Length: 425
Image (cartoon, rainbow, N blue to C red; front, side, top):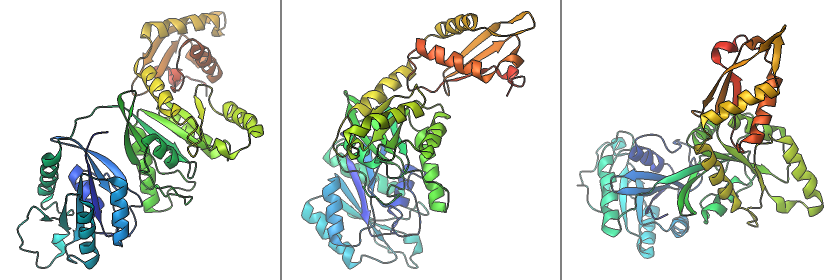
C-alpha cells in the first residue's frame, strides 16, 4: 500500500497511545497506566485531509537499540518522538534522537503531558518541538497539522478504497499472527507462544488482484474472559473487529484438532450473520498418514456450508488461498440472487415437502420475504404456523442451499415475526 507511515516512538507511559486516540478523535488504542500495555507495533489508517496515512503505535522503548530495531522494521516516512514533559528530555531520549538522525529519518519531538508540569515550558512550538497534552487536547490540532505538513513536503499520500475487510479470529496460539504476517508480507505482528501476545487487533493493507484489502488480526479468545479490565477490553476489541469486518476467517489448529471451544466461537461469529470460512493452520505438524482422518474430523464437525482451507503459515502452504476464498465469498454475499428466485424456490420446496396439515386442511406457505441486511434472512408465513417444527425449517435450508451458491454465508430461516409466538419450541 502506498500510504506513508508515521511512527510514534518513545519510552513506556509517555502517552503514545493516548496521542493516537486524540488524533483519531476516538479510542483506537488500549490506554493504561501499566507499563507494557502496548505489546506490539500497531498500524492504524488515518484518513487525513490529504489522504490515507498510517499512524503506527509502538512498544515502550527502554534502550537505544530497541529504537533502532523498530525503525528498521517499520521504515517510516516520519518519526514522532514522544517525551513526557514532566520529566524533560532524558539521556535515553537524547540517544533516540541521535539514532533517528543517524538512520536519516525525518522527525520531530513531542513533549506530552504539559498539563502535569507545574510551570509549563514557555518555549514557542517550533518545527522540531511541540508541547501538547493528550489528556486535555492542547495543541493536538497543531500536531496533526505538523504531520501533514512534513509529509506533504516529502510525498503526497494516495487516497485509497478498501474493497473488503477480513478479520482473523480464533483461540490463542492457533497461528493468527503468523498467518497475518504471511498475508501482509512482513512481520507486522509479534509472534510468541505466550497467550495474548496480540492484545488489540492489528491492521494490514494488501493488494489482492489489484484490489486493496484490509486484514485485522484479532486478540485471541481465551476461556474465562473477562477476568480483568484489560481482558474485558480485549473481548470488546474482538467484537468491534468483527463488526468492522466484511468477512471472518476463523483460525483453528490442525495440531489440536477441532475443539469444543472452537465450535462455540464459530457459533458466536455465525450468529452475527457475518460471512465466514475456516482456516486450519499448522498442517506441517502432523504426519501425512494422520492428515486424512483429522481433515475428516473438521469437515464432519463444522456446518457444511463453511468452506475450509488447510494451510501452514510457517511453510507458507496454501496461505495465498485465504484471500481468494475471502474475495469469492464477499462477492457472492454482495450479489445475492434476485428475491423472486428465492421466493419461487421456497414455494416449490413447500410443495415438494409439505408442512404438517391441520386435520385435512393443507398448511399452505402464504408469503416469503428475503432480507439481506443486516444479515441474510428468509421469513416464511404459513397458514398454520403453530404446526411448524424446527426440523422442517432446517430441511428447507439444506435443500435451498443445494440450489443456491451460499457457501460461507450464514442464513437464518424463520417464521415471520407475527407468527413466531405460535412457533413450537
